[in-house]
Image (cartoon, rainbow, N blue to C red):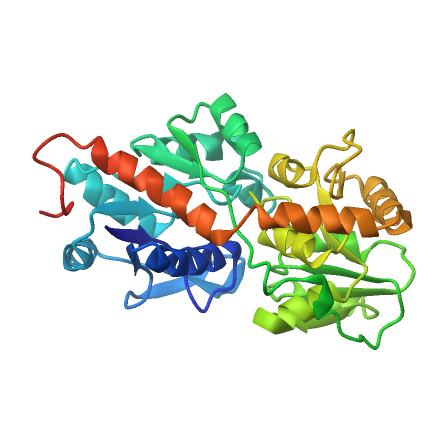
Length: 358
């Protein structure tokens, strides 16, 4: 089977979508499936408003059609709702071809953090975008339930994975910083809510892994925090396993790969109470929860959660968290996603099977 993935997010951009797609492609190869990507590469682009280091591709209809036809895929998946995703969606609709989509980011909340646009308006736009898809894949059951309440249909689960051979507790290295060490990781932008973490009155040290448009201002406002930029592979695994607490206060993520990476590394976690994070870590009333969650916008609750997780014995929770992380093996994730593609192809009417461009 050949699968074409359309995505507006691609290298050198660093984000959960790119990391997920890269890992999924490796898994697909091991399962005998070829994945190709239709990305912004080769198209003119313009800077994303409020985030000049990211660029928006400007694809044209003929080039999109040519790339799809050259790939000759059996299945088409649209990962993002940007210009690339919209152009591929339009191609499929013009030809009455089945396609699947992903809901990967809480874009209405992302937009609301930058402009006074009602969430209902943004969700209405996304609902129309995903409505023609045979299946719209989401990361967790809570996200699925939330989207169903907002009128989305044909939802399926595509969770995320982690490399537990790379992310592990024994990767810890000595960090020349006062303990305890609190870390956050991700894009340094307003929707990640990093300032809520930096503003906390905590003992020890704060470390930020990542980069983004808000970094210069936050570095100036919080000179005691240590900004180290992006880290990848073993460097990220070593840094993550060497800290005392991961704090992830994002307001827009639909999963948060770093949560799984911290769990595999045996590191305590504090995260915002987004439904998907609760799915991964456990609800506040769950005594077996793998991390603490706090109400977004409640800085006092965030501070209490950080100190609470720091005070608790970690050995049992760390072992349980690592065991849970093993359930998110990329090969299992890949097999689930590929099963959805095969089900979609099996439902295509007779005479339209085979290459979708045939």
